[in-house]
Length: 46
Image 1 (spheres, one colour):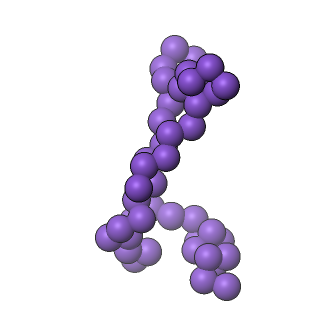
Image 2: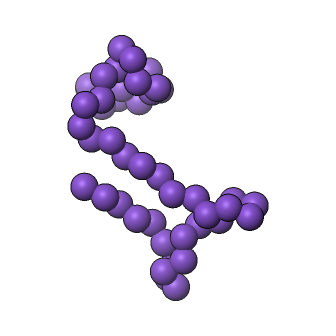
Image 3: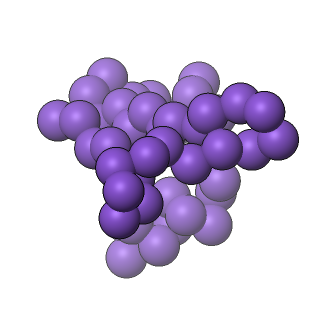
């Protein structure tokens, strides 16, 4: 699944002079090795 966030003119967000995109990995995520926020994992598990 891909998600693209744009404004109402279909423009990607910018930070300084760079366009910003986010990647969400919903497959093969491993809390023991992948970068994550422990409080977010706890919230998802509750």
